[in-house]
Length: 390
Image 1 (tube, rainbow, N blue to C red):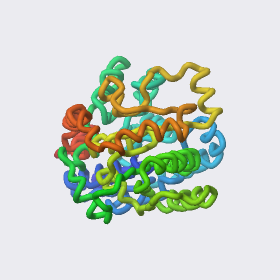
Image 2: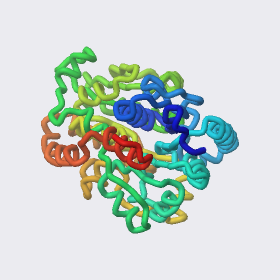
Image 3: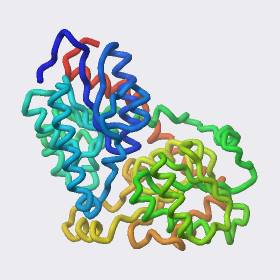
Image 4: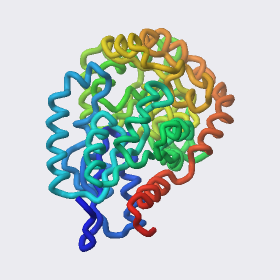
């Protein structure tokens, strides 16, 4: 599986969910600018396909989270991985880039690395939060790890792993001083109404667990805010279908609820506050400079296993708090992820939008730290590993 000089470079990429699809699309576009003629194939979503990926499978097939959930889908995921291995063997990539999805990607990276194919793992698992020893295993699979956050490379260095902080591409998509008024105009939102954005995750399982709780919290908020307007972006058609199914099984919302097709960034920018699942959305809300409440729960079995085995090493789970090094935004996790506590945490931001001004200096400092053309830096790190002149 060595590079063939007579043909264009073949770059395999595998992303596991919507956030990885966005990262992969930016990386493909940056690689195209540097390499000119190159071919891209693997697993991705609509953004990666639009950027030029020949998608053998859709990334939604990998969007499973939690130990219990993975066990339920394990036979299907193993079949998909075997199929992908055969496709890669036939296609003979010059480099493999696994984007997040470590449980799926790392075994493939390890096998290809043993065959002499350069391997990159783009997006470090949260080794800063739990199971730090994973850094050594990741280094055994990937020749290079591309890290989105500055606290990650030092952990890898302790295990002798080549890891590079490339910045977060999302930091370059948000203005340092965002324009909320323009976002409201794009969405047709009345400037006088209190606006709440809901982001219950991009996985079907997350939406099924979190959206009922989030909507019940909105119902409680409406008692204090009769004019409350709620914006609910759906990441893709599967998410939209899940949102519709969850809403159909709940009492009719007595507040002004608008389900959007995409437009998550505009929804955040237009909102006075954001209620979201822990993950990339929390970083996006920070970059949008919006007050937020992070609320999340996993299945009871997964939670029992994680806590019982002592795998969790941090007291703060969300990215804003991890990057700030202190409790910057409220976190309501597992048993605290309930309608009443969520509504109580959101109410001050919605009653007095100016209350969020104190968050702006730390938000801005983190934004500036993460900015720096992340896709371009990631592409440079990939090409450096390939040994291809820039």
